[in-house]
Picture 1 (cartoon, rainbow, N blue to C red):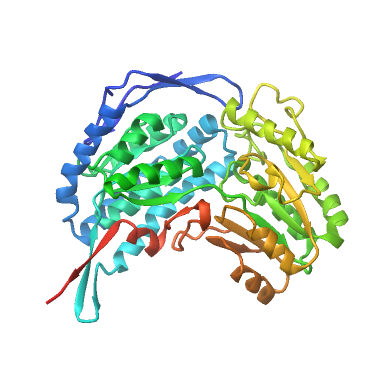
Picture 2 (picture 1 turned 45 degrees about the vertical axis):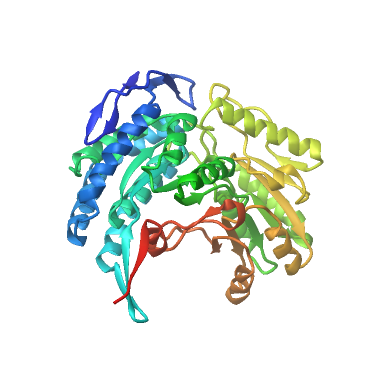
Length: 471
């Protein structure tokens, strides 16, 4: 059993003021993996003070100095790549495949910010004025448990590239992952106070970051409910906010799609990251006259999905992160049946032989109405809702009939038609015939899927304030 009893403040691992401990439970076996001592508001205040002091010098560093430090950060994280993968599999239950990709995304985020920093213009001529882009100040970074270190590396490297310092509050459920990453970042040799990591609860540490006037900006990834609280509380000190929130992403299969390719891809899009992904394509929109063929192909595809030990290379879906999350998903499956949706495959309970962990049967509902809860609410588990449509116009209307707008997917052979449909979807990212990630392109949501964007130029500018100089 591992004990995490230090937080990271002002360049050192220190004993927290907080004394509450949190058990870290394996989602695959229910084994006690470790304990973490949680930071409290006093710890957050100490970290904010350290970041504020460091900002005075870090904000004045040159482009070349920041690039040098980001290169050290990348090298240090790369050195611990396998450790980061292993701990994500063990603590979070991410499959080996997904955990490997997630750590690579973390590295790619740092690399993309190095590339961006080399070419970004912090001073522009507009009209007769000079516009200088200054770092906004100390950033409060709050990350979730479903890809913790990837979020930290992206947000932190962006903040550092902009000239900001940071206080990071990761999820308490990712403490072992955070510990490995913190050790790597410490080895990178960044100046004291430039980044600080205080693992604690949202109502304690998160609330302090949101309300403390020493924090100029919040970058949060998580639920829409929490995002709204952050926006409300942060406005008291006029904090800048970037909120990447929930999703209920549509996946439109057009009439000309090759179903033999589209259906396996749709299952992968729905069940990615064990279904615990804000961008998961959990609403599958299919032509009404192709529904029966789709049902046959879905059964075949889902039957081939291996649920099991996340450390096995051939596992597609691992356990839910916690027993609470397992029960939440079970509740939605029960609701789907009660609402009158047709259960095509899966259902309640554990897959056979996997009763000891938080494993869920990959589940597909068909004949779903877009008014049902399983079609409107983010389940965050391997549950797919299939909705039929008659016309392309109806498909677009159904896709946009949601409070969310984070991601959307389109599958079809006619590229021009797919692009025309993409232009009409209300989503921050639309992927056609696949779901590749581009760390140089903006990511974020329409409607209640968030405010602002991350990655690339748009992500960097969110940490900068334009200052007009008139001569």
